[in-house]
Image (cartoon, rainbow, N blue to C red; front, top):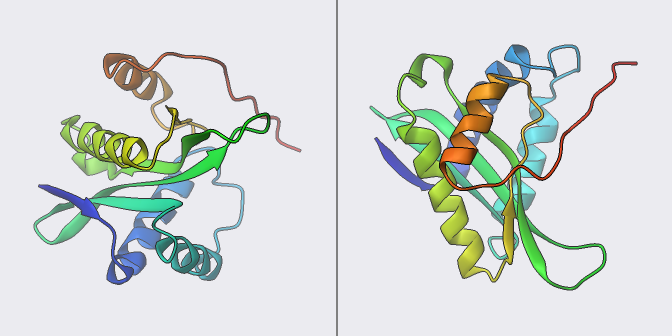
Length: 151
């Protein structure tokens, strides 16, 4: 398995994998727009100083991905890194190698860009306890919760 920065050629496979994520979690009742995602990906990939995508590739197939971006705090000009998503194909979750390597690569990128913190979140609802355990194992601290109410 290799972990690398994304390329435009990855978008189709990433969007397909993202649909698995949407259908597996709390977003399954919300429409999934491949067109919107492709536009967003094209915007983000052209701004590597503000956003970056990483993919885990095994046998020429994308099995995991993480997309992160930099923001400033609403009260400060300092930067922090946030994620848009972290997802690994359900059939490739026996090992925690892919998510750990994706998170580490994103963390290194954020550090290089001058971020003060990396603040990933998990709102998909897929294997919530395992995700929390993974981030705790990687020395992230829990600073809050994400709440949801379907309307």
